[in-house]
Length: 259
Length: 265
Image 1 (cartoon, chains in turn green, cyan):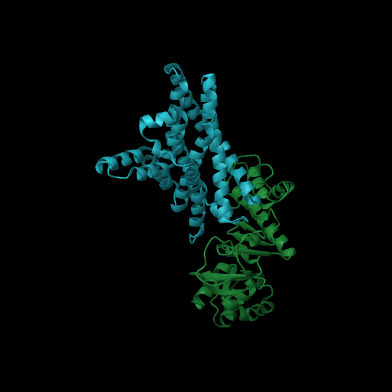
Image 2: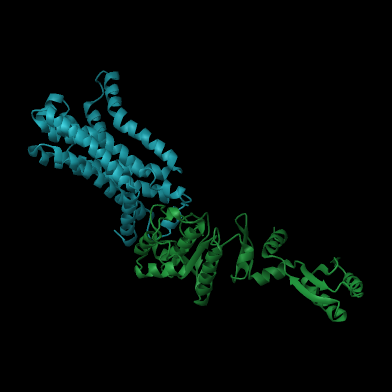
């Protein structure tokens, strides 16, 4: 991101955007919107003054300032000094700065940092809107679980190197992490013990049972064989919940297999 | 200046006004300049020969300090606040951004200087006011030179605290000890050090050049003969070149220093 923004001088390589080599100069920066990690602004200026400065610098009409304040739900606090803003409000002001020009390339560095639920809804709405318009968002985040459902491509980095890339689904399949299945049982039903034995019989499964619950983990490609047991124990099994591993576990697994 | 530069000049100026910096410095400068003027007005027969040089002495010490402090956090302050990256992501070169920030702050400084000297001008005798008005622009130029120097310091160090300490050291060196050092050099070499070189060194320091030029204006050539320092006054072209080097030249060096840094975040 730093290289793309012209903030870090690369040791080697080139920047390709849409297949064309670019230099992070003025022309390219006109196309960018940027939200830095832990965004910060002059504390003695109001939110509106901050936005007006960026609007003037970007050649954007001042009516857009009102619009983006509304989008990030900061209209009420916009006349107050940034000094009195919460972390979440500063982050939302940063998002407003980033989308001022409706840039074709939006760079978001840790956009969820410090955001409250209201702020998260704002960022999800913006990501969705940019995706619907077919625009590009480059996003860096440690919040893998939150991001998984909202991004189309993931590049996993460790020690400055690309370790894996693909859609979240592809990476999840590649990791082959066991899926946890929760069964709710009727404790009075005598067939409950037989169910435990049947699950053990599938091999690799070590079910743990309490009175009315049984939990087991199973490889994703064997999930169907486990679920196939359910009709045989109709009445014994009163509910099934499938829990996929979190995307953070996928990340750790991918790093382990691609050191 | 380009769009980003113009917006940044305004933003810098607005920020300085909002943080009451201009107000505080203006009041301090107004009080000191007024004090000096009132004292000179009552003490001298020909007020301009005392008021002018007294104000020059006051400005040559106070303005560089204020300007260095104003400039010390131009870059490292942004870095410390984590706002440098966002600023440099704007569609402008690092040079344009540095120039715009310096100009915005020089504008703020020029208001303080104008108010400070303005108070002195109002309190001065009627006949001397015109001569004192001519002090305003060179004093702003002196401030601009030291503000640029402060900005340079802010680009070469990482933390505002370090830059502030360096700024005070630079102020002591260039405003207090510089002339003493040159005097010491003359004493140590028993006058063997060429006087042209001494003149050149005096003029190379913006505080020295300001003092020499302003004293020449108020004391006149006769005063200089009496003081035997006529040779300190450089030719007009040289003087302009020195001021340009300290303001535009040093700002360009600061911008170059910034662009050569590996990481600007």
